[in-house]
Image 1: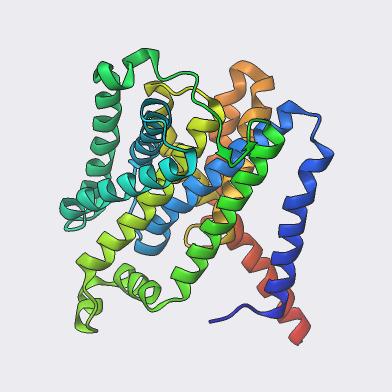
Image 2 (image 1 turned 90 degrees about the vertical axis):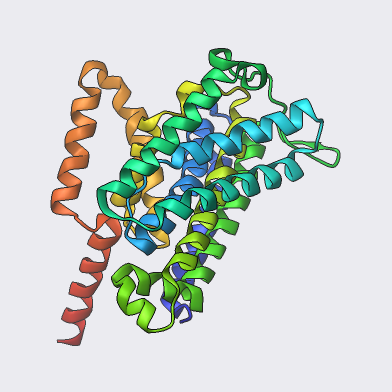
Length: 319
């Protein structure tokens, strides 16, 4: 399944806008910080999209894989002196292995039991970080994490870091689109519809889920490694269950199971949460009410609404 001409044009326009837009905000540390955080959360939302969008499972444990990527990246760069990019790859692989190990028991069950297992995993990771003080420094966290270095180039400004994050977003989107169009992607969707029917068709649901968990965890770890080097310091409270709920919300708001969905959902909610801080005590009320209204009137997210609008326009053109 290839891209249509319209999809290619829209993709190129969005890519060009993403490349050019930060130039107009280069002097604003505030907006460059929001752009970078939104980019990191886009990758993290893509990681959950593999589980929820392609398998139909709800995970509340993405913060755990995010933390694994962040702490291992920090440990390898600071403790062992490994260059940032090999450290980021190793941390992402470690998160992927953790995802496969979690998938061995979790993939055999579904529904609320799966939610509870992923929730427990995220909390276990956080508690290990909190109590393994010899390695993680506990509540003090890990500070002074060095910025990425690419040869002689030190990526330390927010403007330069934006393009590093953008590069990994593009890689993430290309992988997601390739997986979705592949034979394995069709196996995922078949497993989502019905495991028994998929098994009859010669698809192994267990191996499909394990591969899916591995890919999902890899990109969550990648986002964690990017987050650690960008913020420069990490601590256990940054990886609590609230983060996992936020990522699930971003997935649902943008449109689960789609390619543009994580981009739209993560960007919208990162900016919305920041702008709502101006209303102080009403912040959580307005934010929560807005999410509820979106779920009621746009049950398939913003992408679902855009598809309905497109279908209406197409039907009128046919008439």
